[in-house]
Image (cartoon, rainbow, N blue to C red):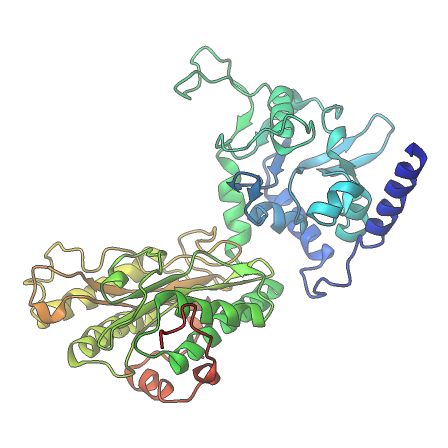
Length: 489
């Protein structure tokens, strides 16, 4: 029986090994050469005599023995292309020499191949796959990290992100992320913390830098390469198509969740791997909740607007697009006035958008337009009046994160949003005719040498274009499902 078990395990390992690079995967991911270039760019920007350490994202538990679908840490993915958990990357400013004389300037430790686990939770590429598929010369299994001997005290700076204490320990696995972090802390003499999580004052000064990486990575990730822009264009276009298909399919009586499902079906139809963020689909007054993700309203009213803020994530890169449309296909006079005010604010910020401008200036421009318009509509009394009808900024970077890393002054090839909004909750101190109107218009832009390019123009933005699109037929109107509870005869 023992020999049969060994034979089965070897057969299983052979089976799994044959899928080290699965033909089921897309062939248009960023190349290993691209990721290697990103590591070199980081190395060039690092301080003298320094080392940067990155950890893969943790596996997050959903409930009991079910985990959330894994999503790699964006910095880790940016630098490696590695999409599995339980890994650590070290990038050195200067060449290092191993005990056997090997010279290297980067090293990665990854989760080990395991035939039985791969049968349950998916294929792994292991150390050899990391070399072959991702282009690392120095790649080892995570079990080797504990034995890895490098004198961290010799570095002027050890760059890493501080730990958020939300990594679970698997006591049966000495190579999990928790163990890698604990081993790293011991290697670098990480300060011990008291029960209030404040560093003990008697700890000696050290070479640990837990803040410097953010600025370095923001400089890299904020300005997109040609390859990244191509992926962003695809993510944006997929998200726009979702908006268009909903405009054609929506009818009074549909639920918020049904509208969400149409968007997300379009995403999957185009092979988008994930959502860039939880989908926001708010009908009527629910649109006044900026990050409304319940999406539970069972029946949309004929007279309501619906605010839809959704973004597809394609090969790691996410769009961020919002459209607000009338459920019945035609804006009421009040809805139209608020909508066109928000659109005017967006257009004004778009005209101001160019290299050298600070991101925050776009909010100032939109806010001036909105406040002036709210005065003209009698919703506020003066342009300087404090109010919550427009409570947020209008712009942020997009990329591997929906709120991506990047510096505040715009440069060519940065990708950003412009998203003004006006939200008037029920029972506000205004004329009741405005109650329940929530409008946000959000588009994605690429900064050019002269100004900016609208990436998301495929999804209608004006009142006339939205109303015209909503008159078009949809194949989904013929898609009917059986009643869960048959009507009584």
